[in-house]
Structure formats: structure tokens, C-alpha cells
View 1 (cartoon, rainbow, N blue to C red):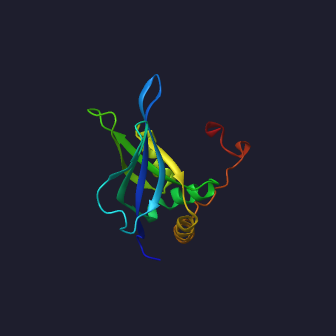
View 2: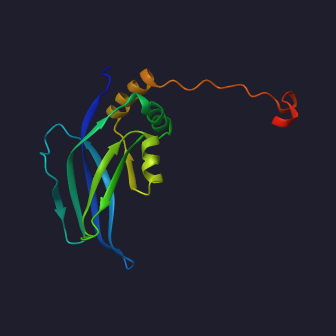
View 3: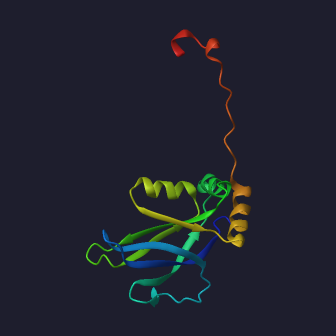
Length: 159
């Protein structure tokens, strides 16, 4: 397997206008699709009915890194493997949002959330899950468990 395998994806964001009386706009990531060049290079609007709009943002590269193998393993073992998409809104125009980063690493998604970024997840299709599983199988090695000595065998000052 390639040392740094990657694939290109496109992200779909849905925008709802006034979903409640407390919000003017609500955004959510609806899908992440493999992008083989069929979407072009520029973001575009797919539909807008006045209340709901759907936007497509192509050209995001997802590269797998050996040092994130634990994060890929955790994503796969979660029971529902997902894409993690970090996205932002425009302070000057709150009706606008766009994705910034797409990852498959559970750990990287958690780090982004710890940094107070907006992160949504959407399910990974089977072919991507299989691709990710092959990488994790090759590169993830759990740390060996270290036996803990019972407290009664430790010196008194270490209990």
C-alpha cells in the first residue's frame, strides 16, 4: 500500500433559513462523496427553494498518515465509521458556510472539536471503509499493555 494514500472528496452542506424563531440560519453537512473530477473545481449551489438550500464543495483531499493510524482504528471500531468535516461560517454574511477540512481520523476530529471548531460527521461508504481498514490493519499497532503491580507490592511511598 502507498505510504500516504489519498482520495479526493466533495462535501455537501445544507442551509435552512429560520429553522426556529431563535435561529436565522442552520447548517449541516449532509454528505461526503468521492470526487473523481466530475464536480469541477469551484463550489456551487445545487438547489435553493427559498427555505432550504444545498451547496457542493469539491476538491478536498483526504490523506492517510501513519501517525494517525490509532485515530483510523478508533473510527473503524466505533461501530459507525464516519467522515469528520470541520466547517465555518462567515461573520460578515451569516447565511454562508463552507467546509475547511475532511478527515477520517477520530483523534483529529476530537482535536478539532477541542479547539472549538464546528465538526459534523457523516457515514463512510463501504468502499472507503474497506480502504481505511486496509491502511489501519497495515499500520496500527496497539501499545502493549503494561502489567500493573498490585499496591501491596509497591513501596509505601508509591501507594
